[in-house]
Length: 247
Image (cartoon, rainbow, N blue to C red; front, side):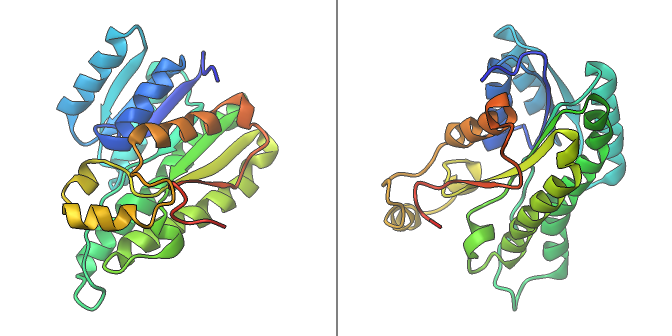
């Protein structure tokens, strides 16, 4: 699934799924623009990619800030000449029961997880239209499909990403641009590392494959959707959840 000559932009690339996606895209031959708020972690990632013979550049930005998104993507296109692949991965949680959830926590999660994807798509689309080729991949969540108590904001944002994915797929399909989503289940990342062992064991009991997923499991799905092998797939939600949710 060679991505040679392609340029990928990955948001939320400083850690977890985003970092692993960036490494995998680079391994498959793509030049990678990595974006997140943490400049230091981005620099370390770029060094790792370039040290292995790949191409990468860091763009420190907050995806919740429209002006930073615009200037960051403009800078990435100026450096690499285009963006072929966009991975909307940046996400946060602000968990609380809905009756106690502060409006600020609702707004922050929707802005970072959903509105940022719209902003990034809007700003990369011209580059994709110009070359009549593009891959947009939105990282959603199993909880956007089945809900989760205490995560009304997160589940709503991730469900919104699925609707956004399908709408964009219909808008740009005629221009040879696909838009798909990857819906991870329980993945071992910094976000899940803080959970108790009891909660983790309880989650594993709901997973037919009997294990939590890894960032590599998600990155493999993203690489496939970005490849020519997936050229006839669009508006699709690819579940990477070990069978936690089926159908």
